[in-house]
Length: 217
Image 1 (cartoon, rainbow, N blue to C red):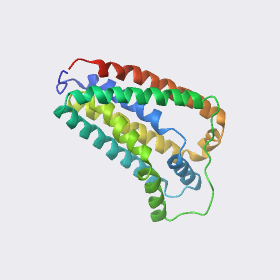
Image 2: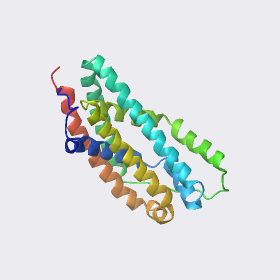
Image 3: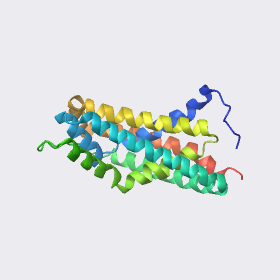
């Protein structure tokens, strides 16, 4: 692959947008972490702390995934094709799953139980974030695999930057916009549209990643 360390900033837009789209597609799925952020937003408890933790955790995990897999690929070039093939299959399956869920979507609900102290809130969000095996499959393995395919540190940094921007935007909107977003997220029809968009996005990304698995050594 060509080294892009001297590419102008405008040439880094594509990996940044790819990271943005991929992270949005992965992060908006209904789950315990999103429900907890929404709950804290509804109660207006430690929202800034929770949003910052979720964003920072994503940034560290995604950057570590991209950097680690990039190093492995650099040492073993044949690994790039294997990881790209696995990533394309994962994206294909994820996209088809999202489209299937769009047929009968669920709804995101936030509980309104007793309030939490800052430390309690951090412990809980850390559990929801770091004890979830999917975070390592998504943030480290999948995002790391796709990001490591970009040649040169600037392109990989732009990809990670797009991922972190998506994470920050999502958690900020979910936490600080909770009171306005909660009625929308409680409607299955809204998730039906979102699942369909996520599914199509993942299929497009799978189509873009698949040729990397077939590229010559």
